[in-house]
Length: 75
View 1 (spheres, rainbow, N blue to C red):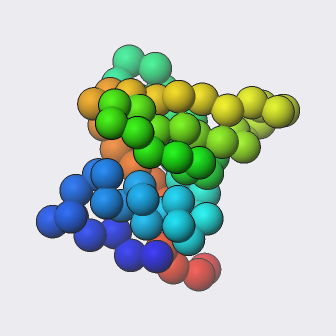
View 2: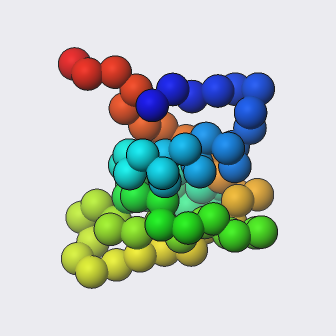
């Protein structure tokens, strides 16, 4: 997985979804959530399999996401 700055947030989230890469999204005024992108709509993403939250998913407004973090290299 490689982040592509010129492609924008939606493209990078879609790539993470297709490659099933866990992501951490930082949400304006609400901290961060970690999970897998389960879907991308016009206004929101579905963040599935939330870390530390049993059987929970979240809908996150795309315009509220301030940053996305994901593993791009093996340690």
